[in-house]
Amino acid sequence: MKIAFYDTKPYDKIWFEPIAKEKGFDILFLEEKLNNKTAVFAKGCDAVCIFVNDNADADTLKTLKQAGVRAVLLRCAGFNNVDLKYAKEYDITVLRVPSYSPRAIAEYALGLLLAVNRKIHRAYVRTRDFNYSINGLMGVDLVGKTIGIVGTGKIGQAMMSVVRGLDMHVLLYDPYPLESILNKTQEAIAKFGSDIQYVDLETIYKEADVISLHCPLTKDNQYMINKETISMMKDGVILINTSRGSLIHTSDLLDALATGKFGGVGLDVYEEEEAYFFEDRSDDIISDADLVRLTSYRNVILTSHQAFFTKEAMYAIAMTTLNNAESFENEKTLENIVL
Image (cartoon, rainbow, N blue to C red; front, side, top):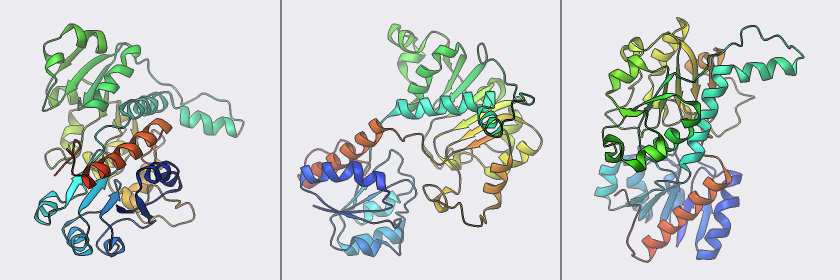
């Protein structure tokens, strides 16, 4: 089986090459992102392997079909960058990695929360310049505060677990709630604590001191954080997003930051990240005005979609992705099929 591997970074080769060799796969590593122009590079390949900022839209999928590609292997959980309607039309199988290290992402989200609350990022910069003043670095105790966790899939559940030690009140929202939590089973209480409950989104917006997003991007929740929902939130609320950038309407977020609405914002994703994230743009003139404005606020931490980036997660991603390819090649049951 030959696989065209798009948007390759050095660490991808480290984890994918040995496993591919064991399985007898031939991987064509490409630095280019997948789009309609680069899809022709996959000619002669059975599958393409793509990441979060590759674009498998209708035109791209048509080109892939013409090139002989029969499968799209997502090395991530989300699949909002694949046009499933046209994948079905062109008979292209789509497989993903539904879970690689939920704990890694939850731990990172907690790290963003702690850092932005206690201004650790600002303190680090100050002390590098031998400035040991703590003026302006005051945070709040998180104990007794309320955190709203939006999305209770595997990552959301991991987040529920890691915040237990903070003794926070936990409000949950998910359109598909977990029965074990709804029914407060002994297993759920032992795992997540007794102080957890599902509520509607409006309640989370109004009552949470911290809001942490852990949901996939869909047409129903795009821009769920917007001018209207931000206006419901408490002054000084902390917002954390390690999911997808388009859950937040960036312009509305910036307007609220300008008024001092947020106590802190921790972002590992950005609405228009495709042109910047995972690349070194330090010598470039940044034309994205919203991105420049975001990084100018001292109560904002913006990182480059690295919440997943641990050794354990990279191994799991590589293994699951290539297991998906192996199952597809051998016509076995496709456990991680999207379409």
